[in-house]
Every structure is written in C-alpha cells, then in structure tokens.
Length: 100
Image (cartoon, rainbow, N blue to C red; front, top):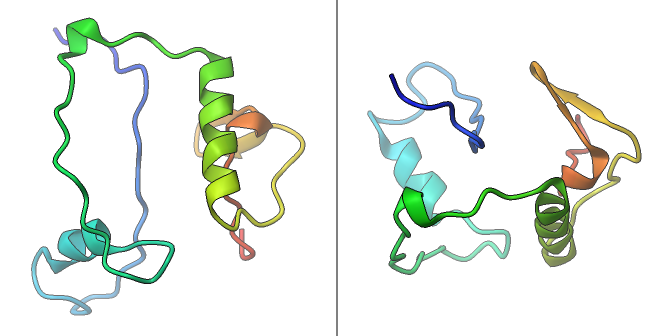
C-alpha cells in the first residue's frame, strides 16, 4: 500500500474532440509561459522523496504570494475557496481567472 500524497498539482485543460493530435497538448503545456515566449524549462535534479520536507500552510502561502507577484493574479479571494472537494485557504490562491 502506498502512503497518501501530501500535495498534487493538477492542470485542467479544456478540450474539444479532434482539437489536437494525440498528446500534442502536453508538449504545448510544457512550452507555455506567461510572457508569451516559448518556455524552455531547465533540467531539474529532483530530490529523493525521503529527503523532502513537508511544507506548512505558511510555506505554501509564501509560495503562492511569490507566484502572484510574478504574474497578473487577477482579483484574489480574501476568504477560503472551495476547489472541488478541497477547501483552500485564501493565502494559497495565486491566480484567479476573470471567468472563475
């Protein structure tokens, strides 16, 4: 039995049948950037899971604040946000779409 996952990042990409060939969408996601230029991610030497430190609410709020400062976050919530079955603290939200 695997242990539970502490955190998962999910990207939701609206699609229409036949809009892209096979798995081209994943290549496009990896190339996308806020600046509109191709994103060429650096090679990352990921640490082994056994050496990773569990992040606190404060750690995640600081990270979200940094992301918000780097982009155009929109009108961020001031109260908790329901995201699927998860209730997020407002400090963890770093982008709010104008369309919700």
